[in-house]
Length: 614
Image 1 (spheres, one colour):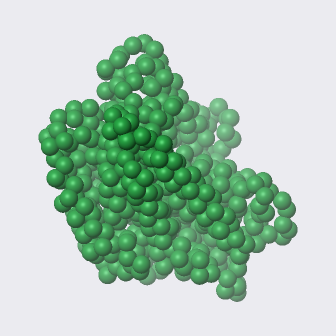
Image 2: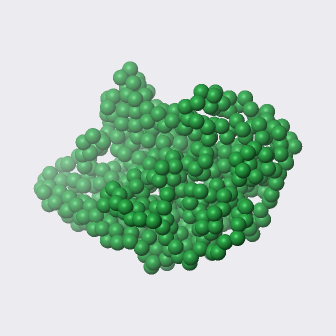
Image 3: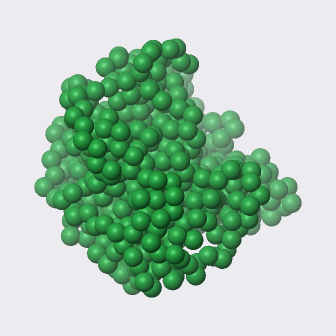
């Protein structure tokens, strides 16, 4: 932890060099265009294979190019200043840490459970972490770099003019949600980059097999990055195939989706299921559809209050599409509608604005590349609105110091950055504060150093689990990482995204001893089947048969029998976040120990050394 900040100047030198190239490219191109050529140049919508530059990088005067470069610098400054990591990101980080240290793609090393919803992002993190062995700065710098590249392509290759590019950048920077989830450690930055690349290819006006392949491949990677975003990509891809339904194009689309198909096959074989465990924990809760729809509406309302510019821009994008008759945009709008309906059905999320940054970026791209000759007057009020939301909106991310009076509202929807910025904010880290600066992380360290075998955690399992290390079996009451609890109904009182389960009698003793002593005979039998899938030999034929039976509902009657007469063990009050069992007395850990103190310092790839002890 102490040596890694030395890499920060290197990152800034890299960013500065990358930005300088953009800046120099802008100035050089503007000076090389003669006035008679500049007036007659036509906008070129680029394809991904040749990346021809749009008018944002070909037309206009040098000062316009400089303005684009300054705007990109401003956006980069904002996301660095407001950089942070969420507890949910640390859930993935524990899997990354286990993976790099030879324990497989696991949360608890004694069972194979997919706790992350973003395989592609997880692999990106793993590559960087393999080189650095320091997860905090690895995740932040990767997020910042990908976000900057995405917005650079947005401004230089999609916007129709330098002034429109500047307006687009400022609007994105004025959105609290977009800025917050340009870091956070979650998959949003990679989703944003894939959206930009997809729309770059889509508007190339090419319908050959190569273009279809790229569209399908990017859509498949987006689904690998987060499966529900496929709703955003599917309508445009289907539209392209409808316009040119040749055998070669259909074949190209199928080939493009092979990475997603391969991952699903791997997931079924390795984990035993097609979907991550979080899907079962959050979507199979036993809560009525009406309740979730009501909560979903509340999520949109809370997000609108938190970040009004999201819905203003989305509404403007829909309106201007129909007013200007830009019918090619309809597939993207249809994808947004499907995505919103899905979000509504599942009850939304507990992170204000997180699910809305992807459709927001899609609409922004539609706006900056659109032609609205009779609506040029609209940019003046838009600029005024951007300035208002950028400087005057409550808790604007443009403020040097941001404070929030309401972190979680009455609907359970949170300003997630405000909740975690003290624990993981980059400004605190640069002051030398240990990251994550959280009591939950300290609880994890205590469990690790006191040789705890099983720990039950009520919330913030990411901080706790990552610091506890691989040898503490972490049971989380929301069941994000527990395959058995994820298949049991939620308790009556819930918060969206936090569906706590009661722990069956004998379950903790089973985890401690390795012998099934669950009190309910039906649940014990179901757990035996589930345990064999998650912990049995990967190539065992009997395991493959049990995978088939579990996924086709052959053992659902056992869950129903238990749910009719549940036998629960312990309850943890909301004031007690962690239950350590068995409770072994031990001294508290040192005040600020290294995250992974090494016995030696061997060499590792990429010119780094390891700080890991497993």
